[in-house]
Amino acid sequence: MGPLMATIKKVKSNGYDDVLWLLDGYIKELNIMNVFVFWKSRYGNLEIITPPDDGCIFNGLTRRTILDIAP
Image (cartoon, rainbow, N blue to C red; front, side, top):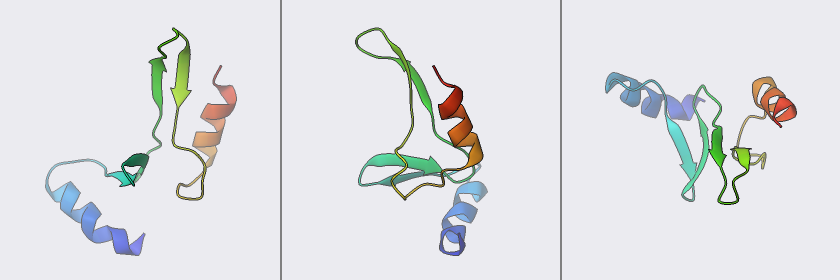
């Protein structure tokens, strides 16, 4: 996380709580939080979506637990 500290300090000095990291225009994660979107699909199904575990995010216990208990 060392190289990210300058960005995180700048964001916090501007009054924000966290940084939303993007890669190639796609949401990857926040600095200290997981990203989940709970929505209704165009077919009317309730879904939880989150960035894929593709090696760019920390697949921690909280993320795994939420995905395990989600319907």
